[in-house]
Image 1: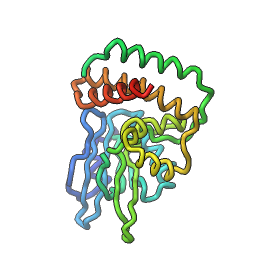
Image 2: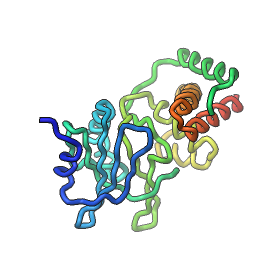
Image 3: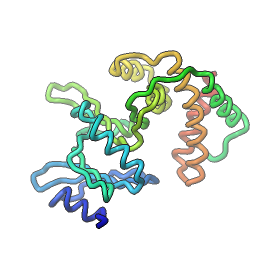
Length: 235
C-alpha cells in the first residue's frame, strides 16, 4: 500500500508543530522545521523527485555521519512516501533575460575548453555549496562553526565541480573568505580544478541566466548574468 506524505509525516514525527516553512521556491522539495512538545527541533523534507530523494537519502546514510554536527543527521525515513526526518541545525543562512551574442560565444567557448582537461578524480560531492546551504553558529567557547545542509544534489563528482558554486558566488568578491574556506577544506584547488571551476562556472552561469528567465525567476537570472559578465571581465 502506498504511503502518503501526510501519513508518513505523522508516523515519523509524532506530535509536532510546524515552526517554519524552509522550502525553496521552484523546487520539488517541501521542507518544514518542526518542534516537538519536548522542545526538540526537527527538519522534515518531502521530495516528489525520486532521484533527488534517493541521492539525499544515500548521503544521509553514508556521508553526513562523518560530518557529525556540521551536517544534518538522519533520524528516520519513509522511502515509499519519499520523506526524510533529520536533525535541525542551529545557525542562519550565509546568504535578464536573453544572453547577448558576446555572452553566448564566451559560454560556448568555455564549454569547448572543458574537453582539453585531463580526467578528474571523483569524490563524494555536495554540488550546491552556496551561502544559503551553509549555517553559521558559535559554540560554548565562542568559536564559529559552519554546518552544511541540503544534500539532494549530492553524488560522486570531480572535486573542482563541488568548489564551483561557492567559488563563483560567495567567494568571487571576498578573497578573505576564499582563503578561510580553502584553509578549512585543507588545500587549495589544483590548476586543473581551477580551470574546471572557471569553465564549468561560465557554462552554469549561462544556463542559470536562460532557464531562470524562462521560469520567471528574475533574481536567479540576474545572478547568472552577473556571474557570466564577471567571468568575461576577468579574461
